[in-house]
Length: 279
Image (cartoon, rainbow, N blue to C red; front, side, top):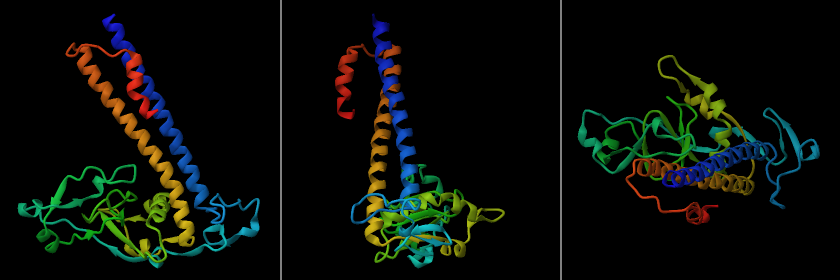
């Protein structure tokens, strides 16, 4: 009975893990489809729904160098929408005092595949910022890896100092919504990688980045597009947290139960109750 009870509990966790992984893949596919539609058709600001496609309503679109886009959208280059492109740098590693501050400092290696910053491992001092090529990017601005891992992307989670791998993009707040560009750049990752140049250290040349062609709706529509993608992203994050929780739970149970360190008390029914809040 003891071994069977362990097996039942672990089987239930495995089923939850498998189901959650399947849900995550489904949401990822939905997000990709949404991004394609939203960045080619956009949103009808009157209804809040996806604009009718070009095939069904060609009168709503115009031909551009970037293909058919909705009338009312603007064509330009990234430089038209950015106030500044800010470089980063690395404070001297020979001066240990520089690395004992409270200003977060990141490199391209600190970016996650989910277009976020992971665990911030290093912090520097104000003196380190003053005496090196690094710059502090204010919270809420876009961080783009333009060297060593080109195409990685995040929104600064706090005021954060950056290495030479990263460019901070300060958008013009009068004509841009940061979240819209954050998702739009996710669509441009492969284009950014194609800009990658250099022999020893690959990277995007600043002029190429500034002159990257883009199409942009007015801010009202930008906000509506970003909101739709933010909702699907939040679902993905919730499912990922749920998955991580159960993987840790399984790991702990495997270690404790199979080694006999802990007595098995919960029945599968109890386990189900414990997880109802997530389902």
